[in-house]
Amino acid sequence: MRKIVECVPNFSEGRNIKTINVIGGAITAVPGVKFISAEPDKDYNRSVVTFVGEPNAVVEAAFAATRTASELIDMSTHKGEHPRLGATDVVPFVPVTGVNMEDCIRLAHLFGKRVGEELGLPVYLYEEAATRPERKNLADIRKGEYEGLEEKLKDPEWAPDYGPALFNTKCGAVVTGARMFLIAYNVNLKTNNVKIANEIAMRIRESGRVKKDEKGNPLLDERGKKVVIPGSLKAVKAMGVVLDAHNISQVSINLVNYLVTPPHVAFEEVKKEAAALGIEVTGSEIVGLTPKEALAMAGWFYAGAETDETRLLDSAVEGLGLNDLEPFDLKKKVIEFQL
Image 1 (tube, rainbow, N blue to C red):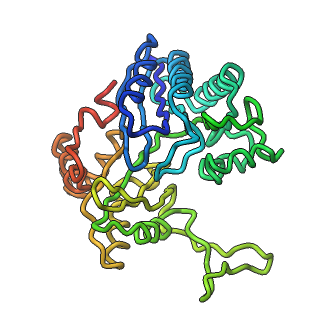
Image 2: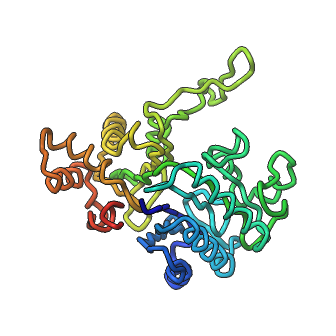
């Protein structure tokens, strides 16, 4: 069986198309990889790039792209809606065929060690490659973002896994790791009020929210720890963002295990919470690729007992409103159709 790994690096540039194209060119120049897509977002000022290939070739391409980004992106002037830690913000390795999670953990270490040694950047390992529990969650590593990184690196508890504990003003830090297939899934709200989007995000995400008193102060339990109200969906991370280009807000969601919470379940939950707040959901979008299985699950939900694959997938696109912001091309968005 052919060994195939997916890599989905996120770069802190979503407005300068020339820069994005040069980074993409660094990837395509590596034999043994197939460039799938680059999806820039001007509001996030971030690009999600997807490519697949044989394990060692994928590591080489990821390093080439990171090196190029370090030359072209200046974090000291970067502004955007999405949390970020560096020019190459996060580089996950995902098993597709003929490889397992342990293989991808090894690749994350190889990549991180090389970035630390050759580019001199601090590197953190997350998800399945995390070296300690408090680094498993990407949001915990990103806490404070680029602006707080200089102080963070002074804390021995946040010494990088690879590279120097020195603040690189231009490039920030890199996070890498191994994870299951993550679906980056955003639900569109018919409002530009980000507070509403954040409210919905806190209601649905697994981590929930901190319970507060009438004055807005966090409530503490008998051990002095903050009381947390869990969200309604498992294996879900979410936050609210504004898309100025469309004059809307989104509930920006990471489905970290689509077998636990698939897109249609998240979509229907957001619709329910939005309706409770008097807000309409107009549709949704998938950033990057999705496994066919996730859309088939949505197709079964919206179409009932439909067995024809084409009709199932079309039903998923319609039911999830995936054509809301731009046309949704199944051939380009479903990973099985790209291999």
